[in-house]
Length: 308
Length: 249
Ligand SMILES: Cc1cc2nc3c(=O)[nH]c(=O)nc-3n(C[C@H](O)[C@H](O)[C@H](O)COP(=O)(O)OP(=O)(O)OC[C@H]3O[C@@H](n4cnc5c(N)ncnc54)[C@H](O)[C@@H]3O)c2cc1C
Ligand SMILES: Cc1cc2nc3c(=O)[nH]c(=O)nc-3n(C[C@H](O)[C@H](O)[C@H](O)COP(=O)(O)OP(=O)(O)OC[C@H]3O[C@@H](n4cnc5c(N)ncnc54)[C@H](O)[C@@H]3O)c2cc1C
Image (cartoon, rainbow over the protein chains, first blue to last red):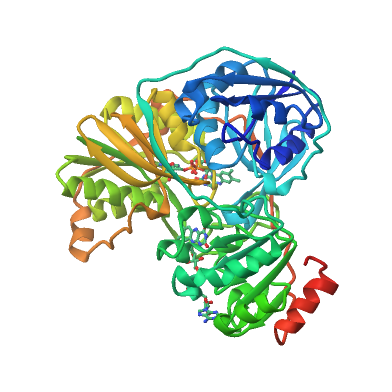
C-alpha cells in the first residue's frame, strides 16, 4: 500500500518543510502520493510534483480548504487515507491541528513528532522536552504520523509526478474562518533558515530586537525569541523557539540574552553550532554552547554586526 | 453553561527527568509532580468565564492512578466546582484518554471543553483534537484568546505564521496556549475549601472503552549529550572561530 503525505502550503507556495517530510516518507515505503488541499492551489501542486520519489500528486482544490480548517481537512484526509498504509504530515500548527482528528476518526493512534524512522512500523520520538528519546512500534493498520522535519534531509526537486484532481468537498457548518494576522517578513522562515539568531528577556524591549536585525541581514538569518521575550510582548508569538514553540535545527544558532531553560533548549539543541551571548557566565546556555561570549549584549551586538 | 476541563498529572516543569538504566521509561519515583501547565491555564480560563457570569459550573476530570486526585484538588482550589477521577493503573495513550473523555462529554453535556494543547511529558498535542473528532465537535486549538457570545465562541489561535481566528458553534473544544492567561495561585482558604468539594471516582474499566493501545513502547533512551564548547574572549575571536573552525559564516 502507498503512503499519503499531506503537503503544507499557503495556496501559492510549497513550504520548505515538505522536502524533508518526503524524505521521512521515503524511509517507510516506496510508493508516495502527495495531497495538496487548498483553494486555487494549482501552482503548489505543480511545485509538489517535482519532489523526488513521489509518484502522484492529488489536488483537492475547493473553497472549503482555503484556510486549512481542521474539521474539513480532517474529513478529507480520513476519507482518502483509508486506502493507505501511512498518513504523514509535518508537525507544524497545521499538521498538529487536523491530524489527531484523522487518527481518531480512523480509530488508530497518532505518533507525534517523529525524529527517526527505524522501519515501516517503528519510529523514534522525543518526550519530556527532548530529555528522553522513545522508540515506539505501531501495530495499527494505518499509521498516522506527524514529522519533526528539522530532523530529516531535504529531497531533490528532480521528479515529475502525475497530478490528479480529486473532487471531494468536505464542508462543515460548525466552524468558520474569521481572520488571520500573519507576520510578514522578508527573512527566511525560522524552521527553514540556515542561521537563526534569537533574543531573550535580556533584550529588555521590542525595539532592541533591531540590534539582531542588522546581524540577521548580514547572515541571511531568521530571528527567534525565548518565551520570556514573547510573553513580555517584545515580539510576536510565532517567533517563540522551544518545547512549546518552534523546533529549529539550523547550522548556526545564536542565543542572545537567553538563560537556557530546558524548555528553550528543547527547541534548539540539535543545531549544528550554538553561540551564546550572555552577561552571566554561569548561565546554563553556556553548558551546551560551542562558543560562549560573556558580556553585555548591548556592547557586543553592534561590534558583531560591524565585523561581519 | 457548563465547562468541562480535563487535567493531567505531569512532571513538574522544573524537573529534568532521568531515563531508567533498563530503558523501560523515565524514572518518576520521588519526582515532583504537578498539574500540567497547559491544563492549569485551561482551569484558569474556565474560572474567568464563570467570574464573568458566562459559565455556571466547572467540572474537572483526570484520568490516571489515585495520585491524580491531588491535581483535581488543585483545580478545585483554583475555582472548579466538582471533580471526577477516572481511575486506572494502566498508562493510557491519547486515543484511549480521548475515548474516555468522550463518554464524560456524553454524560455531562458541557457547552465547552477546555484542554491543554499538550502535556509536557509525552508532548503529544493530540487529546483535544481527538476528543473533538470523536464527539463531532468543532475545535479551536492553541488558543490565545477565547470570546463567547451567544451560541458561538471566537478563538484566536497561535499558528506558525502568526495568529488565526475561527468562530465555532457551541458546544466546542478549545485547547490552550501559553498566552491565554496567567493562572492565579490558590489561596489557603480556597485550598481548604477544595477539600470539601465533591469528587467522584469511577473505574476506567467500567466505561466500556478498549483501553489497550496498539502502540508499544520499545525503549526509552537518554538523548545524545551535547558537549559544552569553549568561551571566547571577544567578538573578533568569535567571528574567527565561526569562519575558520565551524565554517558556518
Ligand atoms: C509549560 C512551559 C512551556 C514553556 N515553553 C517554552 C518555550 O517553548 N520556549 C522558551 O524559550 N521558553 C519556554 N518556557 C519558559 C522557560 O522556562 C523560561 O522561562 C524562558 O525560556 C526564559 O527566557 P529567557 O532565557 O529569555 O529569560 P531569562 O531566563 O530571564 O534569561 C535572561 C538572560 O539574559 C541575560 N541578560 C540580561 N541582560 C543582559 C545583557 N545586557 N547582556 C547579556 N545578557 C543579558 C541574563 O543573564 C539571563 O541569562 C516554558 C515554560 C513553561 C512552564
Ligand atoms: C514514552 C511514554 C511514556 C509514558 N509513561 C507514562 C507514565 O509513566 N504514566 C502515565 O500515566 N502515562 C504515561 N504515558 C501516557 C501518556 O503520558 C499520556 O497519558 C497519554 O499519551 C495521553 O496523552 P497526552 O497527555 O500526551 O496528551 P496531550 O494531547 O499532549 O494532552 C493534551 C491535554 O489532554 C488532556 N489530558 C491528557 N491526558 C489526560 C488525563 N490522563 N486525564 C485528563 N486529561 C488529560 C489534558 O487537558 C492535556 O493538557 C506515557 C506515554 C509515552 C509515549
